[in-house]
Length: 444
Ligand SMILES: Cc1cc2nc3c(=O)[nH]c(=O)nc-3n(C[C@H](O)[C@H](O)[C@H](O)COP(=O)(O)OP(=O)(O)OC[C@H]3O[C@@H](n4cnc5c(N)ncnc54)[C@H](O)[C@@H]3O)c2cc1C
Image (cartoon, rainbow, N blue to C red; front, side, top):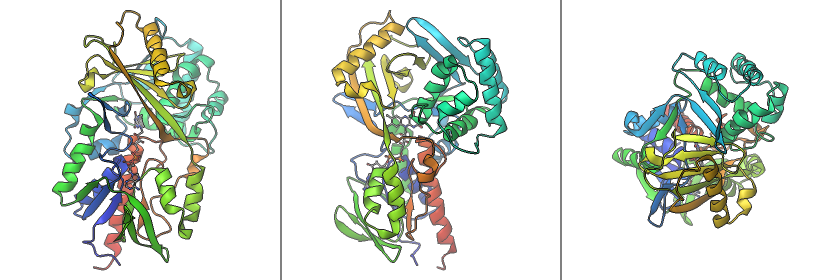
C-alpha cells in the first residue's frame, strides 16, 4: 500500500513527463520530476547554437491536438496569443513552379475537404476523383482498418495515382509518421487523416507557434508543477529500478538508492529498455522495445535578411532532399527559414557543409530571387521518432506494466498515434490517470 502523500516519481521531462506531472499536480498529488538533461522539453526543446537560439527542430501542431492544447491552457498558456492559426492550406513548389495548392475553406467537415480536393490545383480530374474516393473510404471506416499494411499498399489498393502519391500522400505520410510510404503503417496514417480531416471543424487548422518550443509547454509547465508543491530536478537520471516480487520498491538516481513505490517512466524507448531489461517481470516488454527502430529528422536553419519571406508560413518542396520550408517570422525570427528533412536518406551521409550547400541550392531553385543566406546551421536528431512501420501496434506497450507501481509514458507507448507531441501528451495524461484511479481504490 502507498501513502497518498508519498510523491509520485516522474522520470523524464519531455512533453510526456510534463503532461503526467502537471496532471497529477492538478489533482493535488505530490510529484517529483527528475530529468537527466539540463533542461526540460526532451525532443521538443529550445537549443542554443552559439548566439543562435532555435528549436531542436521545427514543430507543427494542428487543431486536432486536443489534449496538447488543453494541457497548455491548464498550465496558463493563452492559445490565441501563442499561435498563428490558419485553415489547412498546402502549397508545394518544384523549381519555379507551384505544383500543388490545396486550400480548405471554413466549412463544416467534411465539406471543407471536399471543396479543397475538388478545387485542388496541380492535380488532374482523375487524381482528384480518386483522392476523393479514398477520402470517402477513410470516413466510412472512421479511421480504422481491419488489418494493417504499408501506406504504399493501401494507396495502391485504392488506385491513387503516381502524381497524388508523390505530391500529396507521400509528403503527408513523412510529415506525420516520419516513415516512408513503403514501410509506414497504413492503420496509423488513416487514423491520423481521419482525426485531422474528418471529425471536427478546425481540427485540420495549422498552428504555427509565436516563440520557441520552451515557451509552449516546458517553461509554463515547470511553473505550474512547482506552484502546486511539486519538485523538478534537472541533471538527475534514473539509473536503475528496484523491483521485487513484481512490485516497484525503489529506483537509483545517479547510482543512489531512493525508495519509490510509484514511478512514471517517461523516458525514450531506448532508455526504458535499458532500465527494464534486467528484470524478469519486464522481459516481454523489453523484448518488444528491442524490436523498435528509429528515424531521423534533420533541420537546416538558414538566416536570410529580415525582409526575406515566404508567401505562406510553410511551403512544400517536391523532388529534393527537404520536404518542407518554414518561415520562422511567426516565431519572432524574421528572415530565418527552417528546411525540414524527415526520415532517413542520402542527406544523413553528407557532412553539414555538403548538406547546407544542397539545401541552399534547392531553396534557390524555388526562390531564385532570394539573397544568399548569411548563416546556416544543421540540427540532426538521429532518433527523432520511432519508425512507424506496418504492424507496429503489437510492439507498443500500455501505460500499466506487469510491475505494480511502474507506469510508462512516452510517444512510443500504445496511444494509437505516431510519435507526436499529441501522442506524448496523451500518454502522460493516461499514465497519471491510472495512478489517480489506483489511489482512489486504495484504503487510506
Ligand atoms: C526534429 C523533430 C521534429 C519534430 N516535429 C514534430 C512536429 O512537427 N509535430 C509533432 O507533433 N511532433 C514532432 N516531433 C515529435 C515530438 O517532438 C516527440 O514525439 C515528443 O517530443 C516526444 O516526447 P516524449 O516526452 O515522449 O519523449 P522525449 O522528448 O524523448 O522525453 C524523454 C525525456 O526523458 C529524459 N530522460 C531520458 N532518460 C532518462 C533517465 N534515465 N532519467 C531521467 N530522465 C531521462 C530525456 O532527457 C528526455 O527529456 C518532432 C521531433 C523531432 C526530434
